[in-house]
Length: 216
Length: 262
Image (tube, rainbow over all chains, first blue to last red; front, side, top):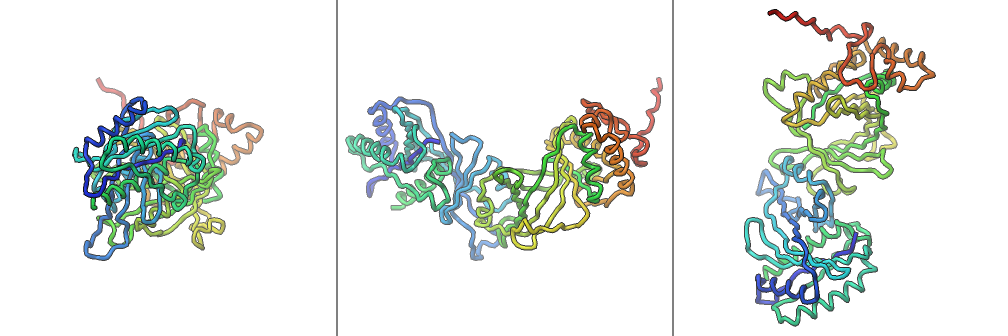
């Protein structure tokens, strides 16, 4: 499948993300002739272990994330970042987790926005909001390069695109910039050939960055 | 949800059972080789202790993995009356790092089994699966090549069908009806309520096997249409025909319908 980079908005120190930035970023995409397409959405859920004795020390992971992606509507992904595990399963895995009553879904966040077509690139720009809330937690952007599925082979063209994109955004003097952090996919046992599991890991990584940015 | 009954059969009669199943189902058997890992939640994890089964299908060119959660059986007086167990089952295909994932979540390996045998998947009003497997245990961790039978000389037969809250009674009826065909060879009951082997098995098996020899030059498909040892089975038949007198077990007697009184 085509390679994808996930970028997140890193606010400047002392500033926070707001919907005006999202509006301007969307205008930036249109200014470089991105043709607006349909809506796009992904969902990320934090799971916590259910412990019979809350006071007992626990070795169970507290960083279990579940992710559903729009382009894989029948799949569900779990990530344990601390142990570099990504799991691909059917949607019914959520029912299995629910029925086994060992981990509980605590908080869910939506990533939602619009898709844009720009030549061989497919861009998705959207907000990060908790479910049942309009409280903006971040801005996220997917950059997909349709002709290539090798991470290595696409690195140069993705870097070039990112340079142009950063330049376009910086013209608006917004209080922050987009960042791309490439996780070490081989630590998760993934190859150079891009897959939805790579996407899931990128979402987990970006989310960790958004949380860290929110704390600063 | 699924409906399920189980039974056991001596290995020496499995070939006869296979002939019978082939005749009844009219589909080729599929080979089965499943490495099953039974996991239990670690101490202090979960509202109550939970159990998950990870199934690795070794029969595929590239092994495929499935996680299976078996929930509670349907309860109540009505459920007690049924000869078939109705229980909640949820399955999900899963990537090959399934074991590592569930170990990381705090699940521990309780035991592992290697089930080797065959399965028939067919329609009898509802989709039914019959599996006949030798259940093996591993003497060393994950050493499937050195697996030894848990109960030498005995194989496990499971008949299952997917069901929903709306149609389970129909599915129970289909499984009960199908089970009657197999009654001369084995007794099928709810899991955990083993009824042992049946006394008629040897005679029924011998009868089925001799029929197989008589028809040695014919394909099993023809056997199927001609009838396997008195089981009259037209190719497209869906409703059970009466069993032959030889194999008709005494407990399956259909009372004659009383004439309608006007």
